Amino acid sequence: MTPLIEPALLLALRDGTAHGYDLADQIADHLGLKRIDHGNLYRGLRRLEDEGIVVSQWNDGEPGRSKRTYALTGAGEELLDVWAQTLQFTKERLSTLLDSYERKP
Amino acid sequence: MTPLIEPALLLALRDGTAHGYDLADQIADHLGLKRIDHGNLYRGLRRLEDEGIVVSQWNDGEPGRSKRTYALTGAGEELLDVWAQTLQFTKERLSTLLDSYERKP
DNA sequence: TTGACATATGTGTTATTTACATATATGTTA
DNA sequence: TAACATATATGTAAATAACACATATGTCAA
Image 1 (spheres, each protein chain N blue to C red):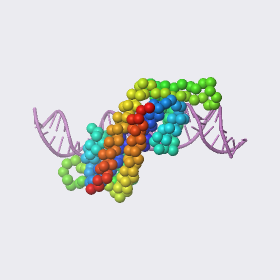
Image 2: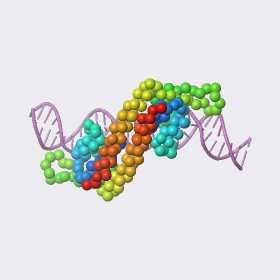
Image 3: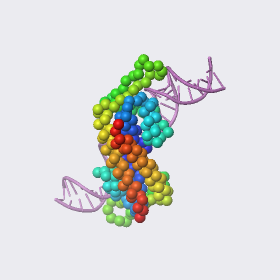
Image 4: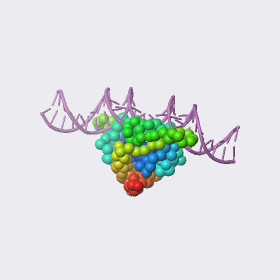
């Protein structure tokens, strides 16, 4: 159960650029997971780039395995705002469910 | 985004038996949705019955379209308890995300 | 200098879930 | 009688998530 990866990713990027592998760690930390699926993350990043939510740039010239550095676009920041509302609503629904659960009949 | 249907369903059944169509309304109310997909709900109920989480009984003899009345089993109540913990964890993760969102850099 | 492991980015494939459409039968009401 | 609500269900396509694998570089210890 983790459809929270997208907002966690947008949040991480709002606080600074990062590359995919970094994001995987940050997201896992933030969501309290051991690790998240790398394959799906990279595909997700490609999709977000197609949609104009993020932009990427290859770190050429630097030594080591070449990395793709991602950054949020304006549309990405707007999407994060929408996500925040969604998460807020969801949190309230969870509270309602948990309240019902607590007051047993 | 509604993987909350199962716990909402279990909660509804904890507070009394009901048939599928009823459950659809109760769950939608509880989750603040207009309506939930009936096809998937009935398939879900069948699956839960296979797993021993709920039991059903046809209301024969009574007039009108025949209904299947569902009730929670002991295993169902235990599953609800597990769900409550999961929802609590998820709520905390949402809070963490929302807190990060609020404290903008 | 080789072997193991971490970093880093990806593709392929399967399984699961969700969404949308359709079918059937009965009851109610304009 | 036509439209709409109740009630249960199947069929199928689309979207997600899970799991496995491939490739390339860097580091560090035996």
